[in-house]
Structures are given as C-alpha cells and as structure tokens.
Length: 213
Image: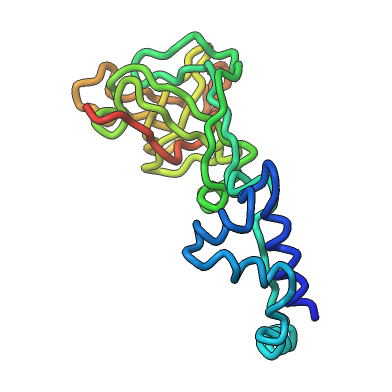
C-alpha cells in the first residue's frame, strides 16, 4: 500500500540524530499530539485505522511528500552579490564582477521573476534614481533580460562605467533617464547609429532591497 508505506517511511526519515526531530517525543511535542500516537504510527500499530483512507488515496494517485534531510533550504536559491557597483550617479569603475557573498531567495519567487541562474545582487551608489532606488540600496538584476523595454529599469554598461537608469525610447535613440529630477545629467542619449559607442545592457532590475531611513 503505497500511501501508508510512504507515511511510515517519511516519519521515520525525519527522526534521528542530526535530523529534524531527535526523537518521536520531540516530533509529537512540536506537532501538539501525544507521543504514543507518533510511536504507534512508526511501529505500524495503527495500520488498520488508516488502511481504508490509504486505499482511497492510492486509488486517486495521491502522493505524500516529506522534506528531505536538507530541510527547507531546498526551497531557496543562492544569489551572488557581486563587487561590481552599478552607479545611480556618475558610474563606478568597480566592474570586475567578483562575488562578495551569497544571499538566499525563495526559488519559486525567483522563477516568477526570471532566470535564477542569471541573477546577481549589486549595491547602488548615488541618488539619481531616488526615491525608488537610493544610495546604498541593493538591486536584484537578471542578466538574461537584456531586451530593453520602455519604462523599465536596467543596469547598463557605458565604456567602463555601470549605471542604473530607466529606459525611454525615441526614433534611433535609447534614452537612459534618471528618476531624480535634480540629477545631472538627467538623461543620457545613446545614438543607435553610432557604432563607436561602447555600451551594452547588463540586465534588468527586478527588485530593490533597502533599509528604512
């Protein structure tokens, strides 16, 4: 009986030294049931009480899933924070992309946003994108999203500088626009016909993390 065996094996796999629960008593206490109930399930002393339900669940193809020994961190994905600092102001020369640390995000959330394998965290300098993005904020960037859409915010490399700007389009031009009306320059024009310009989209900004000020 698949469902019943999965239940017993799943409970057993969660109990033991170095696992989620050291003992059946600990499992019972954290689940707010009597310890003898858990012990009876593990020893299969309550089998007859579950057989009818197990047959129904087997018949409809139900599957019982337990967390593995790695725990809930399997639901998270590490995103590297790179030392490159995209600038919200005049740009930054720290563009080597070295990894400073890794931060865990929920994998299902990242998948809804884009490609988790292509995502990086970067720290922003400058106030040209304030108030949405301020000095010291961290931005989550998907480097697989390099197609520029009007009104979206991107990390852009211009020569040796990396900037965070909002995109606007005009015939034959890409405009990199600052949200802050007091920023200088307020916008940077890229002439698409000028092949001498050395620039490229690094990725789209998906999320901003900031401290309350």
